[in-house]
Length: 535
Image (cartoon, rainbow, N blue to C red; front, side):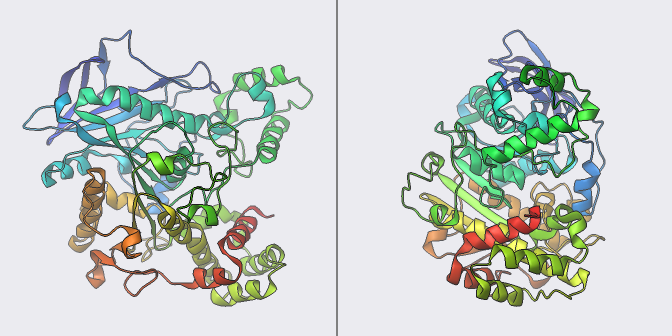
């Protein structure tokens, strides 16, 4: 049902009201002059009516929503989707009705902003698995109402292509991250009119969206009060050093036949390329966040991030301005690697053993222990080897990184482990794979879950809602190094707290930390990264 509301700054805005929640969809938060230009917060000064009853367009990206449904292994009905080069920077706002009305500015409800994953290549706030109506409705039922916001941000070439040549022409790096920061600034400026507290915003990111949250901690400007990191940090996906971003740019230039053009001519040609051409760039050209000397000034390592000490080289002011951290993983997050590895899955054991041997050439005993610990021998069958390699990926890329952030967090940090198995048919049925936590968190798959599985979904969402309200009711990590455990429901585990690292009941093993005792986590992380990229 359509619902019109008079916002003190935006004017009249029409949304959709259903079962105690009003959603304002596709609200523009930033404008761009062209596909590579820096975004600017949209002030709505010339509009007195906003039709927010339909999803806004998504940014330039491939229409591959079925890919994420493939990871979840269960599809949902899709809304009508359309792409826009210049109008994709929009957000969806889900507001709980309080006594049948939009909250007043005086009520100052907590706010969360969700940033989707997708490897900085794809995704949209209009995908149905990200719909926030149900979690907002649940927050009201709990008596802890929150306002939910879901955003689009630029990905692929418009989001992350950069070079000295582009910067010379006035095009800054890391557009996708800067878009996210502008969404947070828009929220700070306008959410009060919806009854939200602009000073009480929680950043929730999943996968690449969570990596973004950790990268925004490099900002000197306070952007959010709390941070929920779901399966991804900048320890897992590190920003590219300038030489690699220059390589990516050169590869794109060569691909489009612009090698002999001047710098300004190249930029002009890139701006004029049909969108279909932009989407043809192969995934082996890295288009992800880069060290730009401005927003991101350094690469972090395990030693820095796991220490509470102020290391000047860390250069992460957000560890002070962001108050609380909730960080976690899925029991088999490495499942995403089956997509990322591509042709490397053929004879994977042989390739893995060779790669590990090269990266850890200075630590031959450690390389052998790693292969033994994960039971990977060169002649191992591909299906068994893939599972074991992805377990190593899970441990070093998701589990160890989450604990490192929690160990060094100066404020209150809490850890969770999502262990509920995937109930749907597909290669990862029975595993708590990457992205499954989102399917449970936002409650959009509840009709497809058994009652005990639904109970895990509800408990997980309730705890995230409590966190956004500043009302977590389990120990901070530094008080017992424990974690909240969600599943498996078949064992009756539904949000229990388990004290200690890799203890019985946590669903985690201590293998990676035993290996690290000898050489540290950084070389092990490099070993996985080099295998993944073929270095």
